[in-house]
Image (cartoon, rainbow, N blue to C red):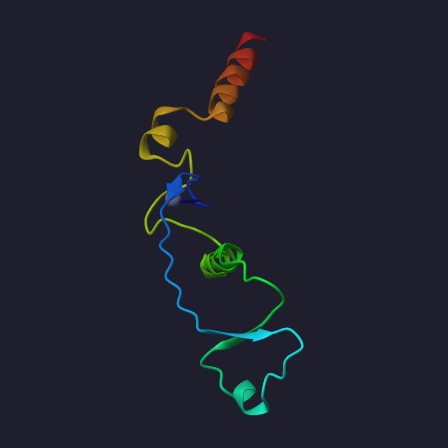
Length: 103
Ligand SMILES: [Zn+2]
């Protein structure tokens, strides 16, 4: 769940990611011909691989920069809020008119 940047409500965002990794022990030769093959990502490994951190990074990279519902409205832009409430400036104009008539 992310926050919709238009209406500020929760929006479910699906993530699908597929990665191929080649783990290369630190200090070991990567092999020149393998560097040209971009069907996988070579990852230099020092010690144990933190799979959880790796998955977390993949998910974060897969998320959209801006999450939005396909259809929604900004807060306060509903049909009833604009129509039902009179503008504060309209009320001010009425008050000013009443004051001028009083003079
Ligand atoms: Zn929204």
